[in-house]
Image 1 (cartoon, protein in one colour):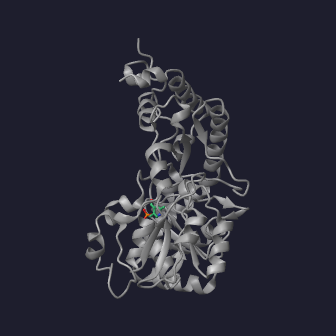
Image 2 (cartoon, protein in one colour):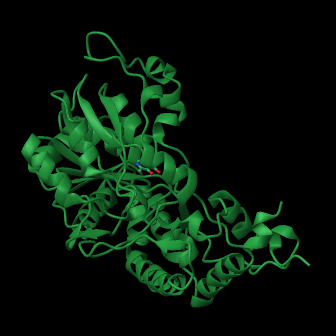
Image 3 (cartoon, rainbow, N blue to C red):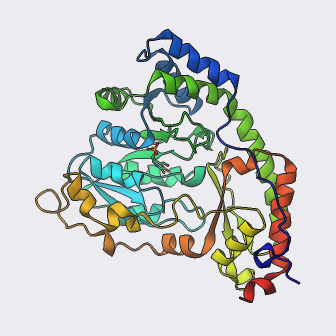
Length: 400
Ligand SMILES: Cc1ncc(COP(=O)(O)O)c(C=O)c1O
């Protein structure tokens, strides 16, 4: 008789793991009603307060609250003076907004490969992609795991490039004790509903540089502003944040311990310079050769049937395959140049190929959402039980 739920057996888990997201109570209700009843919905007091509070939380001097994370990237690029025809180096493994924001300032995103150990932008690939047109690098701290900021800042200093950290996944994470977003020249955040710090939609630019902060604030004021209602919500969520991080840390530490005894699934090794790892999604590596040759997608299908849903990063394929870049009509619709006098070279993302990003998405990466780690230890025991069950029944995964 079949043991695996995929084949009609009893699933390991029959409840939702973790907690429903977002989390809120009367605190948020009260804060929102306060703004509502004030009638002055366009007042800036809470917006200013959350800008200061979150900048301080991430160790930055200035925080410019914005409507969302995409305009935060655009605002940072504008503030840094990135101009038409400039090249901006971005990782191939991210959400498209990292690169579409570059197009929206009429510059050219140059997509490069990732470091297979961390899934973050590869410093060697950055170095190889630099041309006389390169103006900036946007490292993304994928899932919240910090990119190698030592190597990236060393390259940027030597080649006189601006670094804009895309911290959309990395609220609270630290590199060598410093909050992400405060290490590059600018940092950007998203507070969209799925993020670990959220007000439904929202974003922020951080910087330690007064002139960059003034530039960013000028652009923000044009059409990118956060509202007092968003800010009121965000201030409440910030109060909850540390306790949620601690719960996730406790749960993942326990999971990692249990996973060590199961061949074929490896947590991402933690660099000693990652002094705080707050994650949006928690990646682990699936090694088919160590799992009796079962393909990753078959493993994920079986895991889901056991009641443990698991994804493949946030987006599933390198960004040059995503709509805006696979279909260059996007550039024309936006009225953005893609060839001719502005650029030295014609842009064709169909020719971009990043082997590590391709391989990792196709065969290796598995990701759990952060809210799955907001429950109790027995949720982790359930995940481990499902892993063990698949491990012990790979024969069932082979047949079919
Ligand atoms: C890496 C990355 N950058 C930027 C963004 C854009 O943020 P928003 O959705 O708030 O515009 C996201 C959104 O998920 C993201 O994942």
